[in-house]
Amino acid sequence: MIALRRLQDGWRRFDVTARDLPLALLLLAVALLPVWQRHGTRLGGVPERAFDAWGVAVLVLECLPLAMRRRWPACCLALVSLGFATDQLRGYHLVAGTALLVALVSTGLHLRRRRRATALLFTAAYVLLAVALSRLGSGEPPSEFVTFYLVLTLAWGAGAWLRSARIAEAESGQRLPEVTRAAERTRIARELHDVVTHHVTAMVVQAEAARYLTSSPDRLDQSLTAVSDTGRRAITDLRHLLDLLNPDHKTEAGHDARTPPVGRLLTLVEQTRRAGQPVEFTEQGTPSESTGSADLVAYRVVQEALTNALKYARGSRTSVQVQHGTMEITVAVSTAGSGPRTVFPGGSGRGLVSLRERVDVLGGDFSAQAQPDGGFVVQARIPSGSPS
Image 1 (cartoon, rainbow, N blue to C red):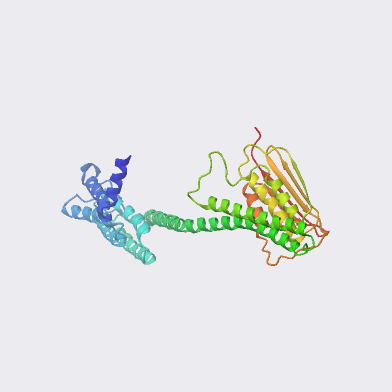
Image 2 (tube, one colour):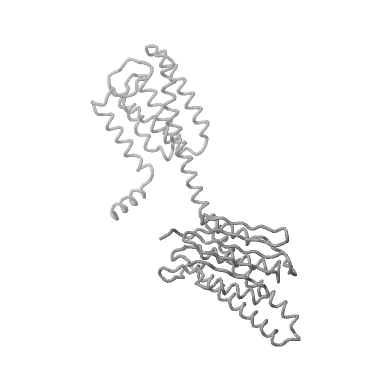
């Protein structure tokens, strides 16, 4: 395999004309064999002529220009067409006439400029050839010339189709790095939003509450401790996220470093409670051994919903219900509409959009709806695997 690859690499180092020459020589050699003579295209019914010195010249004119079919496709087509026309007008009917189809495919594939002009010139030349053959030949019907022209058109069209396919493939290859970079930037922005927004929101709420606790040193100390703990968790999560974004970072075998460990939901709820949000938490069922990214998505749904509760319905009763099934995880977070509201300007709605994308990727369902009383309900059904 290595020797074959080296041979291919060595072959590609040759000039393109040298690489195309073997095909031209092969067709020339085949056409010179007596068994293949007079087995070529018969267009127009011109009487057959014995193979002579002029026939050798016509044969060379039809075959050898194929060596430059990629470097100078228009010139190749012109020379091969001239050889083919001479072949038909003199009645040699050489098998080398096949070179015309090869030249047309190559021209349709490799010609970069003046493609339409070249096609029109070739068509005009073919019409002149058809008229000349009609006068010299045995009066073949026009349908013969039309049919052969359609065959030539198909050869050009095949080359043009290959050219379009190559261009599309090249453009796709150029766009792929850009698409990959955009997807990676989106993933980083989503992870940063999920990690940073929740912790910063909790810290802001806790710091705002501390302003009103100056008369109670014990409660003030608890509030400031909560702010410090939240900041430490934010730093830990950010370091964890940066580790995941580091291409040299390696996780333990069989463990997805993105998946929150067991008990993180309860920790998340407790953190929200310390920020002053009354949260009722219910978790039913046992997480499946193989959930893929479902646990992380469920965690992010709860995290974003609690963050929004702190932002827009601080102090309102919030309920978190998580149920682990054999094939899916269901999450429901509802926030009542009563209670004082904390204003956080500049909300972009990116969090809910990100959650919907996460759930959609796993084939689940996500909804986030406002309630008539001013509350909000977030629900998600997240496929987590198959039953054992």
